[in-house]
Length: 146
Image: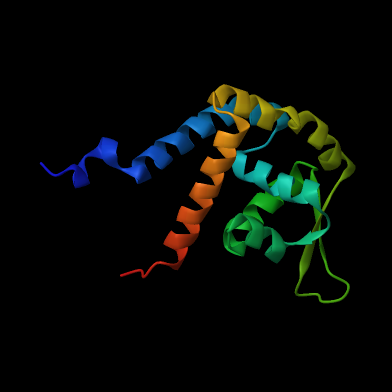
């Protein structure tokens, strides 16, 4: 049998199963913060810089607005963000952290270091892996769909 179709030889399965492992690892930590993983990603974008438009958040996370809007609504209901129409262009919705959302950053700060330690990899190994995965993602995003 060709190795081409062996599950254990598939990079896509290694990434898929690693994603599940990350989700299992992050879930109890994010549950304590009242966040899902996608919401955590949105919060990280806003902790870097705010306000941001829905479009700019979507660009950073590679999400379209139909996926992002429900996430933002739940974050707003939780009291972590506010969404307001831009005074410059009413078609644009700007997202800003609330004081509670800003304070949540301190509680979230230890999570990346704990994840890094749990991985058993060095900082350099993780940096190299991240760069390789980004290159693969970008290549697949521009690959011919046929």
